[in-house]
Image (tube, rainbow, N blue to C red; front, side):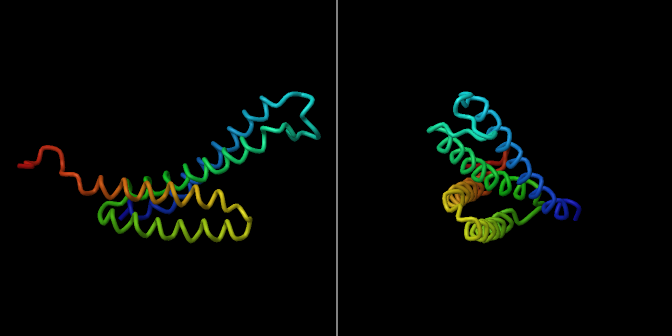
Length: 135
């Protein structure tokens, strides 16, 4: 029962971890910005917007994969069902966030990573347990 209750806080923790990773990577990217391209604390270098976009999309994808992985690892049973519910819920939340912000590239990255993690989890769930006879 406690493991089931741990899933929602673990989802939030995975999401926060991905956000913090993104902030850290953006901070590193800004440090590479030449002084002449810094205006009011913002980097206006020609390359920066691509790096920034890549970091945001990448961290959205990392968040989606982490959330699904944490949910499946904490689920004491019905892992396939948990993964499917988390994927559907995650796509709905990502759609809402993309609709409200216009960040459709992040939506695509998150959905792609979520679906990939879901397929990986499906294969993992079908693998025979260690030590079992598979003849």
